[in-house]
Image 1 (cartoon, helix red, strand yellow):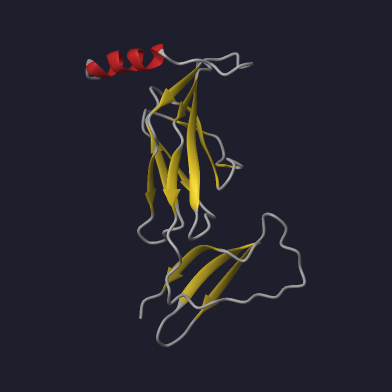
Image 2: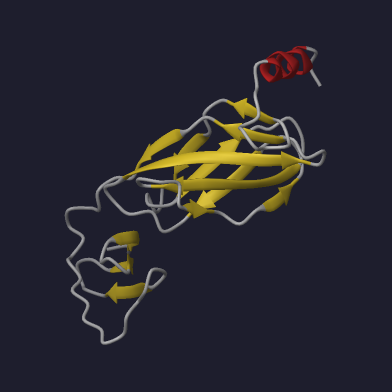
Amino acid sequence: MPRALPIALVLGAIGCQAPPGDTGAVADLDHPAILLSQHVPTVAHVRWEPPAAGTSWVEYGLDDLDGQTPPVYLEGTSHEATLLGLKAGRTYSVRAHTRLDDGEEWVTDLGLVDIPEPPADLPPVDVTTGQDLGREGYIVATQLLAEQSWVVIIDHEGDYVWYWRGEK
Protein backbone atom coordinates (compact mmCIF):
# COMPACT_ATOMS: atom_id res chain seq x y z
CA MET A 1 0.00 0.00 0.00
CA PRO A 2 1.45 3.41 -0.91
CA ARG A 3 2.49 5.54 2.06
CA ALA A 4 0.29 8.49 1.01
CA LEU A 5 -2.90 6.43 1.26
CA PRO A 6 -2.82 5.73 5.04
CA ILE A 7 -1.96 9.39 5.69
CA ALA A 8 -4.85 10.54 3.47
CA LEU A 9 -7.23 8.19 5.27
CA VAL A 10 -6.17 9.52 8.68
CA LEU A 11 -6.46 13.14 7.56
CA GLY A 12 -9.83 12.44 5.92
CA ALA A 13 -11.19 10.88 9.12
CA ILE A 14 -10.12 13.74 11.43
CA GLY A 15 -13.03 16.04 10.55
CA CYS A 16 -15.76 13.38 10.55
CA GLN A 17 -18.62 13.54 13.01
CA ALA A 18 -21.27 11.01 13.82
CA PRO A 19 -24.88 12.10 13.31
CA PRO A 20 -26.92 12.69 16.50
CA GLY A 21 -28.06 9.44 18.06
CA ASP A 22 -25.57 7.33 16.11
CA THR A 23 -23.29 5.24 18.27
CA GLY A 24 -20.72 4.49 15.57
CA ALA A 25 -18.48 6.94 13.77
CA VAL A 26 -19.45 7.98 10.25
CA ALA A 27 -16.71 9.00 7.85
CA ASP A 28 -17.21 10.83 4.57
CA LEU A 29 -15.85 9.81 1.20
CA ASP A 30 -15.78 11.77 -2.04
CA HIS A 31 -18.66 11.64 -4.48
CA PRO A 32 -19.30 8.16 -5.83
CA ALA A 33 -18.40 7.52 -9.46
CA ILE A 34 -21.65 6.92 -11.35
CA LEU A 35 -21.41 5.40 -14.81
CA LEU A 36 -24.33 4.62 -17.11
CA SER A 37 -24.36 1.36 -19.02
CA GLN A 38 -23.37 1.86 -22.65
CA HIS A 39 -25.97 -0.72 -23.68
CA VAL A 40 -28.90 0.29 -21.46
CA PRO A 41 -28.59 3.92 -20.25
CA THR A 42 -31.20 3.47 -17.51
CA VAL A 43 -28.77 1.16 -15.69
CA ALA A 44 -26.21 2.93 -13.47
CA HIS A 45 -23.05 1.47 -11.94
CA VAL A 46 -21.98 3.19 -8.71
CA ARG A 47 -18.36 2.88 -7.56
CA TRP A 48 -16.69 4.12 -4.38
CA GLU A 49 -13.57 3.39 -2.36
CA PRO A 50 -13.98 2.79 1.38
CA PRO A 51 -10.78 2.15 3.38
CA ALA A 52 -11.44 -1.58 3.88
CA ALA A 53 -13.81 -4.46 3.21
CA GLY A 54 -17.30 -4.22 4.66
CA THR A 55 -21.03 -4.41 4.10
CA SER A 56 -21.95 -1.97 1.35
CA TRP A 57 -25.15 -0.60 -0.17
CA VAL A 58 -26.40 2.40 -2.13
CA GLU A 59 -29.36 4.67 -1.38
CA TYR A 60 -30.94 6.44 -4.35
CA GLY A 61 -34.07 8.27 -5.40
CA LEU A 62 -35.70 11.15 -7.27
CA ASP A 63 -36.90 13.41 -4.45
CA ASP A 64 -35.88 11.32 -1.45
CA LEU A 65 -33.38 8.50 -1.08
CA ASP A 66 -36.21 5.97 -0.91
CA GLY A 67 -34.52 3.20 -2.92
CA GLN A 68 -31.74 0.95 -1.67
CA THR A 69 -29.63 -1.84 -3.09
CA PRO A 70 -29.37 -4.96 -0.94
CA PRO A 71 -26.49 -4.77 1.59
CA VAL A 72 -23.64 -7.02 0.41
CA TYR A 73 -20.31 -7.83 2.06
CA LEU A 74 -17.54 -6.78 -0.35
CA GLU A 75 -13.83 -7.50 -0.04
CA GLY A 76 -11.15 -4.93 -0.81
CA THR A 77 -11.43 -1.18 -1.16
CA SER A 78 -13.13 -0.86 -4.55
CA HIS A 79 -16.88 -1.33 -4.15
CA GLU A 80 -19.60 -1.28 -6.79
CA ALA A 81 -23.38 -1.59 -6.93
CA THR A 82 -25.75 -1.58 -9.91
CA LEU A 83 -28.96 0.46 -9.93
CA LEU A 84 -31.86 -0.89 -11.96
CA GLY A 85 -35.34 0.49 -12.62
CA LEU A 86 -34.26 4.12 -13.08
CA LYS A 87 -36.77 6.25 -14.99
CA ALA A 88 -35.61 7.64 -18.33
CA GLY A 89 -35.32 11.43 -18.50
CA ARG A 90 -34.97 11.97 -14.73
CA THR A 91 -32.20 12.98 -12.30
CA TYR A 92 -31.38 10.68 -9.37
CA SER A 93 -29.55 11.39 -6.13
CA VAL A 94 -27.15 8.64 -5.05
CA ARG A 95 -25.25 7.98 -1.80
CA ALA A 96 -23.06 4.92 -1.13
CA HIS A 97 -22.45 3.38 2.32
CA THR A 98 -19.95 0.89 3.70
CA ARG A 99 -20.06 -0.46 7.26
CA LEU A 100 -16.62 -1.78 8.17
CA ASP A 101 -16.10 -4.86 10.34
CA ASP A 102 -15.44 -2.64 13.39
CA GLY A 103 -18.88 -0.96 12.97
CA GLU A 104 -17.59 2.30 11.56
CA GLU A 105 -19.74 3.49 8.64
CA TRP A 106 -18.27 5.33 5.67
CA VAL A 107 -20.68 7.38 3.55
CA THR A 108 -20.05 9.13 0.24
CA ASP A 109 -21.16 12.65 -0.51
CA LEU A 110 -24.41 12.88 -2.43
CA GLY A 111 -23.93 12.27 -6.15
CA LEU A 112 -26.31 13.08 -8.99
CA VAL A 113 -26.89 11.16 -12.20
CA ASP A 114 -28.97 12.30 -15.17
CA ILE A 115 -30.72 9.42 -16.91
CA PRO A 116 -31.14 10.29 -20.60
CA GLU A 117 -34.49 10.59 -22.32
CA PRO A 118 -35.59 7.47 -24.20
CA PRO A 119 -34.66 7.43 -27.90
CA ALA A 120 -37.00 9.46 -30.10
CA ASP A 121 -37.68 6.43 -32.30
CA LEU A 122 -38.74 4.26 -29.36
CA PRO A 123 -42.38 3.50 -30.20
CA PRO A 124 -44.97 4.43 -27.58
CA VAL A 125 -46.43 1.55 -25.62
CA ASP A 126 -49.99 1.72 -24.33
CA VAL A 127 -50.75 -0.97 -21.76
CA THR A 128 -54.17 -1.68 -20.34
CA THR A 129 -54.41 -4.25 -17.60
CA GLY A 130 -57.11 -5.19 -15.16
CA GLN A 131 -54.44 -5.95 -12.60
CA ASP A 132 -53.03 -3.35 -10.19
CA LEU A 133 -49.26 -3.38 -10.56
CA GLY A 134 -48.80 -1.77 -7.16
CA ARG A 135 -45.59 0.06 -6.31
CA GLU A 136 -43.28 -2.74 -7.40
CA GLY A 137 -44.92 -3.91 -10.63
CA TYR A 138 -43.23 -3.89 -14.02
CA ILE A 139 -44.32 -4.86 -17.52
CA VAL A 140 -41.94 -6.35 -20.08
CA ALA A 141 -42.92 -5.70 -23.70
CA THR A 142 -41.34 -6.57 -27.03
CA GLN A 143 -41.97 -5.12 -30.44
CA LEU A 144 -40.65 -7.11 -33.40
CA LEU A 145 -40.70 -5.20 -36.67
CA ALA A 146 -38.79 -5.59 -39.91
CA GLU A 147 -37.17 -2.15 -39.58
CA GLN A 148 -36.51 -2.10 -35.83
CA SER A 149 -37.18 -4.30 -32.79
CA TRP A 150 -37.36 -3.25 -29.13
CA VAL A 151 -37.52 -4.84 -25.70
CA VAL A 152 -38.72 -2.47 -22.96
CA ILE A 153 -39.56 -2.57 -19.27
CA ILE A 154 -42.17 -0.12 -18.03
CA ASP A 155 -42.77 0.63 -14.35
CA HIS A 156 -46.13 0.88 -12.54
CA GLU A 157 -46.41 4.57 -13.53
CA GLY A 158 -45.95 3.89 -17.25
CA ASP A 159 -42.36 5.17 -17.41
CA TYR A 160 -39.59 3.43 -19.33
CA VAL A 161 -37.02 2.01 -16.88
CA TRP A 162 -35.17 -0.25 -19.30
CA TYR A 163 -35.02 -0.49 -23.09
CA TRP A 164 -32.91 -2.24 -25.67
CA ARG A 165 -32.88 -1.69 -29.41
CA GLY A 166 -32.49 -4.83 -31.49
CA GLU A 167 -30.18 -5.01 -34.45
CA LYS A 168 -31.63 -3.99 -37.82
